[in-house]
Every structure is written in C-alpha cells, then in structure tokens.
Length: 472
Image (cartoon, rainbow, N blue to C red; front, top):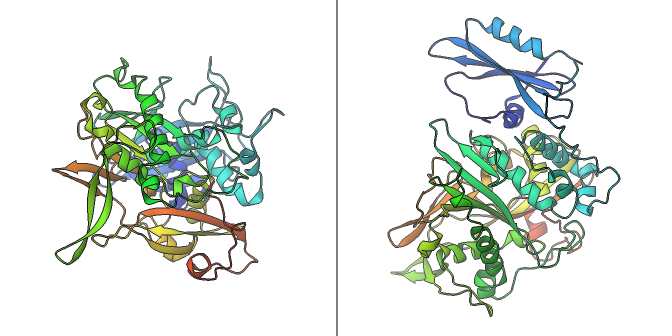
C-alpha cells in the first residue's frame, strides 16, 4: 500500500456513496494499491478517541464498490490492519453480485461508430480528462442502460453534464442515488433533507461536431445576446421538461425538484449565454446606471424574449411553475474542466494547461469581468480556491424560484453560488470568492513558450483564430 495525498483522496472519495461527507470519524490517512484497484482511508474521532476504516474496491466491470466501513475501533494499528486485508496488491477484482448486469466498458465501442469528440479522448492531451471521466462513470450509482452509447455518440455532452453534477454533489458531501429512471438524481443530506434533480442540456436544432466546429462569436447586439436566441433556447428546453410533470411523480411529490441545465446550443455558447438564462428566469437583465455619482447595477424588467414566438420572460414570475424549486447551471461543463481539475490536483501533466477568460468583478456596479490568464498548476491558479486546487463546484450556480411550493434550501448545495429574490431585488450569495464568468483552456506541449495575458487580450495578439482552443 502507498499513501494517498490529500488532494487525491478528495478525488477517490467521489466514489463513496456520501462523497466527502464524514460524521465524527474524520479522514486521517489513506492508502491505495499500486495497481489502482483498491483504496482505503483510516478515520479518527477526536472526541471518543476511536478509529474507523473504509475500503473501496473495483468490481470485475471496474465499478467502485464499498467493501469495508467500520467505526469505533480502539487503535490505529487495528484500523490499518483491517484496511490492509482489502488492499492486497494484485488481488482479483470483486465478483459481480448475483442478478447484477455488468456495466458496459465506457471506452469500448465494440467497433460501432463513435463521434469525433469521443475519439479525441484517446489523444495524449486528453488523457487526464479521459481518466477523470472514467473514474466518475464507474462511481455512478446506476446509469441508464444506454448511457455508454450516448456518451460515445452525439449525446456525449449530455452525459458529460451528468458526470459533472455527480462530482459537484459528492464534493459537497451529498448522498446520490439513482433508484428511478427519472429524475436523474436524488440527493440527500445527513439530516434527511433531500431533493430531486433532472439533468438537461440545450441543444442545437441541427447537431454539430463539438470537436471540429469552430466557436461562434456571441451576438454583437447586446439585446440579442441577453434575450435573443440563447434565451429562447433555454425557455424551450425548460418548458419541455416542465411539461413532463416530474414534480408530480409519486416518489417526488412534496419534495424539492430542480432542473440542472448546461448550454450547448451553439459552439462556444456556454462562454456567453449565462446572462440570457438569468434574464429568462427572472424577467430582467442588468445594466449600469450612475446614481448619486456612483455606478450601480440596475435591473431592467422585460415581458417577452425576442423572436416571433413572443416567449414570456420571467419563468419564476408565474405561479403555474411553482413545482420547479430551482434551476441549477454551470458554464464550465467541458472536457477541459475534467482535465483541469485532475491537473490542478496532481500539479503535473505532460502538457501545459493555460486557462484564460474573465473573473467576476465584485466592485459595486461592475458588469464586466477582470481578465486572467494562468497556468493550471501554478500557485496563483490553485490559490484561487481554499482547497488548493480547482473544485468541481467552482462554476455551479443555483437560481431559486421565489414562488416554489417546495423551496430548495441553500444548505442542500452550500458550495454553489445562489441567486434568489430578496424584497424587490434579485441578489446572489457566493461560496467561493473567485467566480469565473467564462474561460477557454489552451493545451500545448511544454516545449512551447508559456502564454501570457497579453497573448490573448493585448493588442496585436499572437493567437490566431485557428489557434484558439475550444472549451470542449
């Protein structure tokens, strides 16, 4: 057995049913086998001065299973001994339980056609992302029967969003179950509070190849960007889901229900469409006005989105939508995200990963972000977050419905940025001081010179459009 560094324990713990949630007995030290098939953690209760042990092993289909979970032991040595029993180097993987189907191999297409983006996962520059995706897939409680084929074909981005959500939920110590076909997730706290989450993505009217299609620039017209096609696409996607009545299902009724949405309606749209979602949900957009000599952000009310449909704006203003407790959103669901988290944790990669974009400016009245450009392994980047690495929930935002019959408490997912109505204002409270409004990730061999802020934002930038990376 070899020791697991703290950051890597945080990664492996995403395979635990409760993720990073521990009660009384807190993680003390952990080990993993060289073959990566087994890992364990020794826990300690400071008050009772007792020890515990947890061990996870891979099944023959690579799914992570809990094989040891004990507390109340008298000594460190006894807890370590019990862990060591399950961490034998080279031991066969766990057998399949009776009447349990093997989970399909994520990266085995059985010679069937696959999408270009899936094929990109075999490239050296995507190895970190591929490993992380595989780890989370084999940590899922019960994915759909068609999950793997969806991931290998044109629905890869939709399945990627489910993995991203799983990581966010378990990072925040939530028990995740998939007992029912829908909604996709049930998450719960130790106190018994729970919520149901249905994952969905906005998709284009005609599918495009995420791997080879160049990013489209955002609309040059401000109103089109705020309440135009992107907002309409959000509205149509959310409305279609609401019509299915998830909140009225027997196993959901009387409990909070939220839609988790990520945007893929156009190549690169996730980098700019966030404001369109806010405008649609709350029926207003923000602008800057000078009041008493000071610039302040002021909300402008809207009744309809642009377009012939005259889609009503303000989903959260209508009582008939009270069954929807909240909308969960992230503009960071990408292959780049899965690679960056692992690279920032391990502080090592064969390639240089440079992330550039804009960070939320918390200056009162500011509506534009602060540009940044940082190497993902640099101390400056890792110090943006208290964990010392990029967290899964860094971009996660929750927009609360003020008319919800069953509100989603902020304590359910405390490490997200929460938007809610207070009085007549829409306000937000962020867990992380650093909130990235949008970004791209540039992956290049280490033999090439490092990139700087001026490279992407300065006049006469050396980066041509063909060199700019895609977030996917």
